[in-house]
Image 1 (spheres, rainbow, N blue to C red):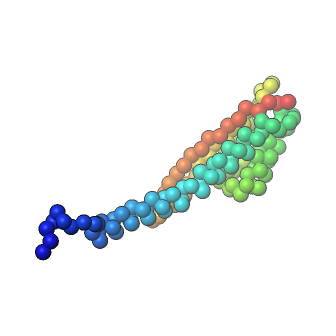
Image 2 (cartoon, rainbow, N blue to C red):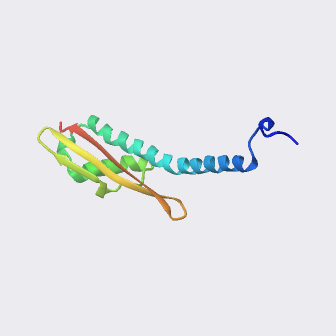
Image 3 (tube, rainbow, N blue to C red):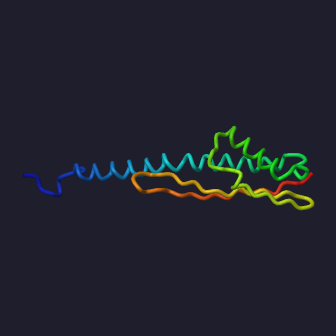
Length: 124
């Protein structure tokens, strides 16, 4: 019989608990990271509007169509025309994309992530 202070290592139960925690974190990571990657793509599309020439002359519908086409090329399907807000002034165009994404984690547990991307682009 060995004394307790000479025994070393993890028990089977503790190894299983560690594996369950690792699996749980991996599932959450794999479900949430694509949402954030799409958010980065939306931010890039919105920020590229600063380089767009003649933005002030285009209608709000045309600007929204430009954004949606670029998002379609980047395979982002969470943003619709209802999520795009455009406000024009004399010298600049303010564009804001505000949306939220709901994804099922497992069972009846969902994750909801909301994003707001905006840019002030020159109207010229």
